[in-house]
Amino acid sequence: MADYKKVVGMLGENLASFLELSKKLLVDWGIDPKKLLHLFQNIRKDDLVGLLSGTHEIRAKEKAAQIALSSDDEYFEQIFESDYITVPDMATVKSYVQEKWGNDIANVAPSMPLETGMKKKVKVFRFKKSPSSQRCVDFIKSIPGAILPNAPGLAVAEMTVGSQLPRDKWILGFDNRDNLSVLALGRRGVPGLCLRSDGSVGRGWDYWGGDWRVGRCLVLLCD
Image (cartoon, helix red, strand yellow):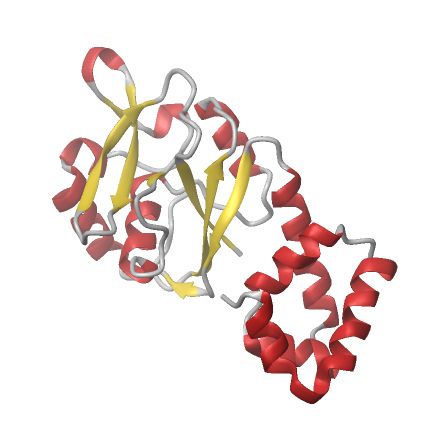
């Protein structure tokens, strides 16, 4: 991820091309200036070079539209997006979930099972307001190609891009209510993960009912 100073530093003699690209995004595509800044703060160097050479225009437009969508949502703010990852062997993932979260979480069948070898991106969204669990599920379903992660998707995110995930954030792996583990008093549990700055890891679950605190996060895997 690059801040605006790094972006400008990468440009050098291509500053004029950068300004022309910015004009295209602002005028031709109608991107809000704040979202444009967000786009350039999160763009990769290879994509920026491609934009300047005119080879990534369609991809950039789709990226800008995705950022506009996530930034406009009342409840959810995207704070992390990985490159494409390859889903590990799912037998290994299940064993990992069983070891880290326990049998009650591991033995539940997700509504959208991941398959070994799938190519997916990992995205994390922070709660700007307090959403219900159902709102979180509906939000994930609204994203094209997104998979409700449950514990296996949460484990895949940790196993593949754990070193890049936000620190000191409680990250939740949602699924449909009936696909979550039944815990005490018949309540359903949403698996969670917290990677702390001191290197320790918190794992567990929170109950489906009620609204979630501002600042907590959800994870999803998508195309």
